[in-house]
Structure formats: C-alpha cells, structure tokens
Length: 324
Image (tube, rainbow, N blue to C red; front, side, top):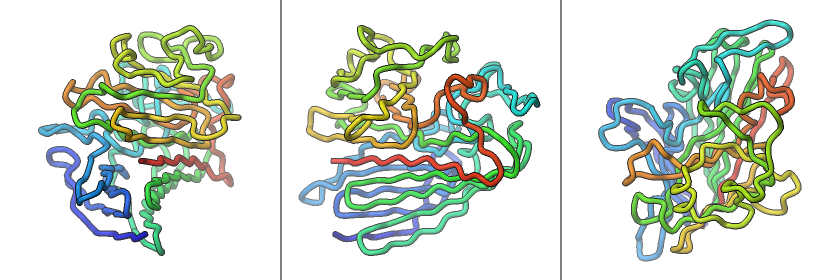
C-alpha cells in the first residue's frame, strides 16, 4: 500500500478559496481544506485509473457556506433551543442563526474560520492535523476553547478525531457534516441505510427535541435496524433526526449501501447519529449526512446526558468511515 500527500488549493464555494491537503492511498483520495476543516471530497479509486466521487460538495455558483458540505462544526453541533442554556447557575445567551435557535455553533461557528494545518505521512498512513482557537464569548459561549481535528487515511478507512480543551465550563459537541452519495447521479435512488439504533429523538416543527425520552423506532418510518431504501424515506418526508445508537452494537453503527455495491460503514464513540437526507438540496445534488454527535439540545436537556467540557478535561470524539 502507498500514501501520497499534496498541498492543494481548494475553492469550497464562490469566493471561498482555501489551501488544503490531498491524501491518496491505493483505495481512496480525500481532500481536507484549511477553511472550516472541511472534508472537501472523498473519491473512490477504481480499476483502470477510473474514479468515483462519493461525496457532494457545495453546488456550483454557491456564494455562502449554507449546507456546510463536509465542514467541521462546533462548538455545538445540531440545535440549542432558544439559543440559550444555563450552566452552573449562569444563563448564557447565544447568537441565533436558525430562527430563535442556534444551529451548528452559530452564524460564525468553527466552520467559518481558517484552521492552521499540517500534514504528515508514515508508511501507508496519511494524516492532517488542524487547530482552531475559539475565544471566550465566541457566539455567546463561555470559555476559551482550543480545538483540534485530525483526519487520517489508511487504505479505505477515513478516521476523524476531534479533541478540545476549555478555560471555563462550556458545552462542546463537534462533528463533520460530509454529504454522501454513492451513485452515478444526484438522486439517492438505489441507496439503503441501516442503523444500529432502537430509539430516535422526536422533534417539533423547529427540529427541537420535544419533552420526554427518545422513542422506539419500531413500527415507525424511522426504523432502520434493517436496511431501508432511501427513496421510501424521502417520499415519506425525509430525515433530519438524531438516532440514539446502540452501545452494544457489534460492528458498524450505520451502513450506507448502493445498488452498485459501493458502501460506507460508520463506527463511532458518540451516543447519537444525526441523519439528514438533504431535503434543502437540489434534486440533482441530493445526498445524505451521517453526523456522529451528542444528542441535540443536550445543554438544556440533562436527561440526554452532559455535554459540558470543564477545565482540566479533554473532549474527544472519534468517527471512522470504511469505504468500499
């Protein structure tokens, strides 16, 4: 097996030019952009020098980062209701960017900033290490946070590890917002999705979790314990919901498959998997995001766990995509 790393220029959307690194193994070629620590593309290397693009980037002519195609998002991925939370008896008002709520860390979250980046290869392993510092009060969050994203490629496995430390107690929940499409066209026809999850988080019309615990997927359109065709999912209204992953699952927590035989297996140490079937995307650029993370609105929902990072602790989130 071989590994090659090249320094490349990347234009994520119109006017958003970034430097980055292209890592190429015998199986895959991936591009990591400094701006927003984007996983800008994943390309499957086929026989006879043929290639298959497996991810969907920003559409041609896009002028903003709307959609966050492949971006690293934080401080808090997903939604915080009413853009507020209380921590240790202090109430914090955040910068809203989805109506009254905050989504993916606010209007200028981690995905809006250039990260410092370095790359290295060792044997068959290629690695890009990116760093970003978020000041105290950034988007309304307390504490100075030092975040790091490590993208590693070994043969057909992409591993993403996020870590962070903070000078004060603050919620942290980071994920990557890569969009997958394993087919030859923009539609999700021919795709199926399997998820090791018995429960999902029910949300209201603002996609904020409703009161009460996660609900069983059994006998609902959210049951993906056996592979479910995505055409049926989209016809039923699509997904923008978080699954509570089965911690005892033996093997990947999710498998995205295509009728061509191409597939992506997902493993993670996170509790949740936000599945978004790209309802806002143009039909010719339809794709699916599989975002490993804490549960949405956890800072306001102690019943969902504790997403607080405190001084002296290190936040860590690891996800692996095995592509074939």
